[in-house]
Image (cartoon, rainbow, N blue to C red; front, side, top):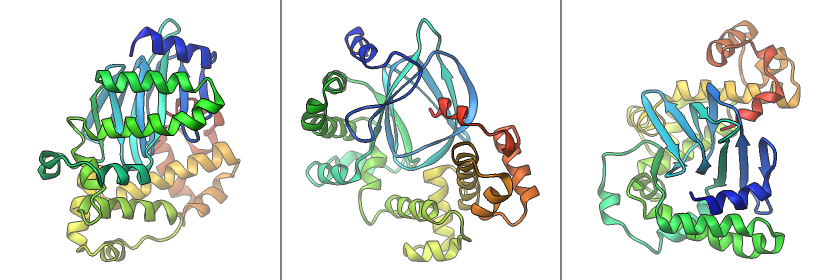
Length: 293
């Protein structure tokens, strides 16, 4: 991303933190400090780094991306994230939610036979290179964010154009699989949503598999390919992230939080929480949100 884009963004944001825009769901994040590796939850996002760099890990998979590359997370995934930034060169990120309705519309129009056939890449996250077209669309989008009228009228057009270019990326194989309704990847995506909607309840994995027309063994295999976690590992991490949010943002106490997310034992919850985040649940603070990326 060039200086022109940074100049546009600098007029929009003056301080560190999360900044809303006139386009629903689109945010700009800035931090002037390095943030050490920490567990963080990424949703279904397109992440464009305008300055600085990020490194995220999904178990054995590591992704590094900066102003020359972007990241697409097609499912809600629990990463370990590290941020590289300084006062002289803060991290500035444009965070764009993936609009599934628009993505389906695009996929119904275009084809990419080689990507559809590719079976080498199944993980629900990937990085790709920023080309000139993506750069130009980003500049137009950031410029539109200065005006509410332009954001509301032109913003959706720029986003659709951006989604289209993402589909054309060299590593976008998973997008085609995910948005093919009968694919295993789409079925796992449905199951991930089910887990998020019912994380506080007992989740029957065989029943979840059957609801998608899959055997339990096939479900486990494809779930691991997409998320790099077994279903039980994934459910546990999602519950812990939900717990952190309840304590730090909604001021739940530890006992109520454990019950809310489906733990029978408060002591086991506290043990799991500390093992994952590195501190006990009572120490979770709203300030943790500064490292959302």
